[in-house]
Amino acid sequence: MDNKDITRRDFIQRVTLFGAAGIGAGSLLAACGGGEQPAATPSAETPTAAPEAPMAEESFTCMDTTGLTEQELAARTTLNYVDKSTMEGKQCDNCALWVAAAEGAQCGTCQTIKGPIHPLGYCDIWAAQTA
Ligand code: SF4
Image (cartoon, rainbow, N blue to C red; front, side):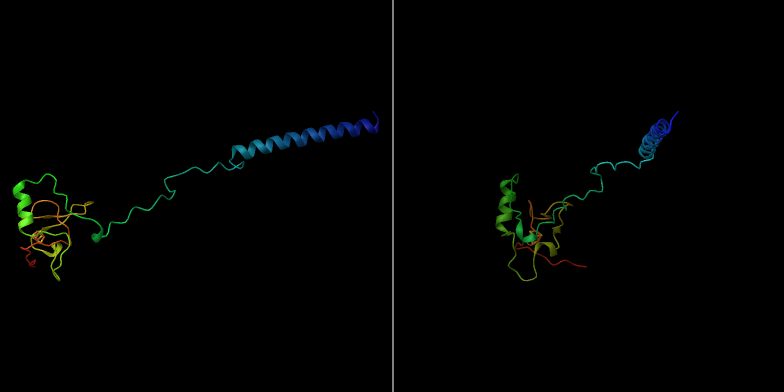
């Protein structure tokens, strides 16, 4: 055995050892999660579009009288219901006969006039709330 063979053998052993160590280290890293980071995936915490803000009271109407009878329509007209009050300090949402809109709805109702009622509306029988 000459020095050249020993050196070659030694070289091969070292390469083999380093190679095995490299593979072992890679496997070990992968097994304990030290490898590549997983691609980002959407989660429940991913921000989504903000919910829509409620519509301003001035920007919707409550004039859809679909389904009302002739008599109910006549009462609405006779009492001069309007979606926008022109009476200072008097509007449906501060009237004693006002029934607030259900959650998620914009138009309320009235204990006397049938159909959708605008919170800023008004009619001739407006009455101040008590208490
Ligand atoms: S009575 Fe007239 S003012 Fe009062 S809530 Fe009904 S519609 Fe509006």
